[in-house]
Image 1 (cartoon, one colour):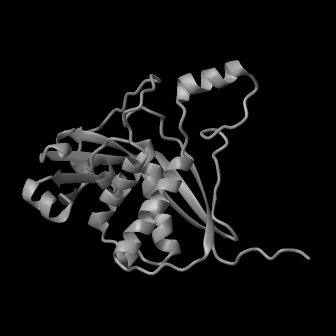
Image 2 (cartoon, helix red, strand yellow; image 1 turned 30 degrees about the vertical axis):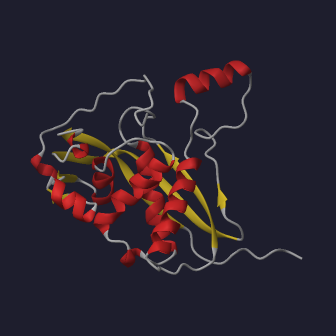
Amino acid sequence: MMKMKTPGKSISHRAYARIGFLGNPSDAYYGNTLAVAIGNFGASVTLEPSDTLVFRPHPVHDPAHFTSLQHLVARVEGEGYYGGVRLLMAICKVFHAYCEVRGIILHDRNFTLSYDTNVPRQAGLSGSSAIVCAALSCLLEFFNVGDRMKVEDRPKVILSAEEELGITAGLQDRVAQVYGGLVYMDFDKATLERTGNGIYTPMDPKLLPQLYLIYTKNPSDSGA
């Protein structure tokens, strides 16, 4: 007998690379920052209903097959050890915990998560958080709970998923990716301690001068 495909529509979301324009890293020191998400580079995540919970490795960024030992070494030296599957798993865990603590009931249907990205790896453009941000949007839509997680809370949920993996970072990048465009952020200490969030003000990107992005293929783990 042919097995019926799990019903439901495929969901896709995209989040973009970000540039810390001014103030970085004062988001970690109760300061002020100005950051912008850029459309040149981004990460997309697709959620498809399925019978079991599956995380689909990316053929390039999560390789498990190599032509030789030399190929493996070249890949690790150029791209590092880690791909995006661990990020998808972490945001699922954190999302579930967020909902459980707040009494948000989730249906029990399963799904498959996959991702793609063209953000230059380990170039300081927040490629990891772009994957997490896009995945969170997929989860919120699939479980139909977008109205139960405030927009201003989403950056800290994304950050907590990365902290699960030992990635050290601040809220700034995730705020820019959740809100999109140009965002002014005031990480006022009293507000941050009371709410866990800064004060976020979207601004018109046309206020910026023409920008040139320069990066080099010199990978390093900024999260370390």
